[in-house]
Length: 263
Image (cartoon, rainbow, N blue to C red; front, side, top):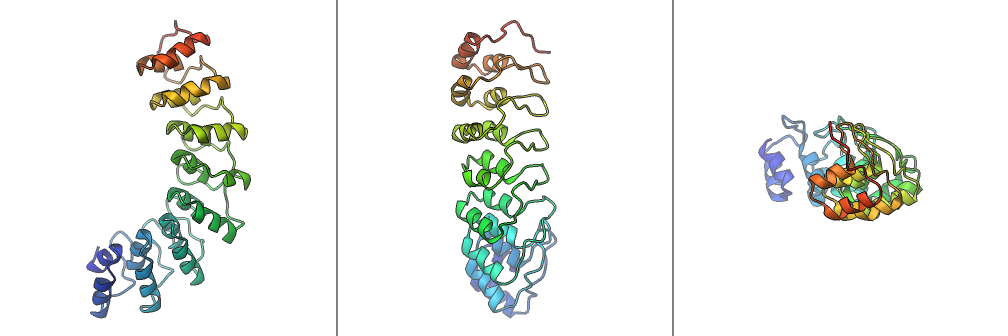
């Protein structure tokens, strides 16, 4: 990075202006591929971005660090005003980048419901089922973060899509113990018996990550208590390994096989 890039990243208008007044190229890319405006947008420094646009006529078509254009980091900033500024200056979501994030992935990452609503209104044709490099849809990311973005499902997001690990949105929510999201997805028709690529289902995913209260609460949903994962684990084996007495007791009452041996 050059001093210009650092000043822009820090949102320091004065230093950025001083460096540019001394002849620095406003569009100079760092070794990593970032420019002054991409660093400023990523950090949400809207006043500095305005200065670069209005006073220095910065090139808004320059790619960002990951090969996307400026709208993706703008969405990640969660700042609707910044997004509107770039859209008003003709930046369009035509580049996805090496991680294959679309704008909805970015907005979900920012936990910004306002940004999501804005994007869905601005781009009604945007693909809610787009998958990033890991096969995750925006709904997967929302589930991981515990964001109950019901309107994603209402607009057509597919609750059954699997990522590269075989996780559905339901399993994504389970790995982080987000019980309200889990219940919402189940009520919307998510398959409670879905398993990942290692044949780990909802119960094992919850117990593996220490989400015992959620596992206990979901046992009443009719989950399979004797499912065996690829490595030979069962919910009872995991509960015993994690010292979770309450869930182990419930599993035994529901017919869990205490004679099963792990491979």
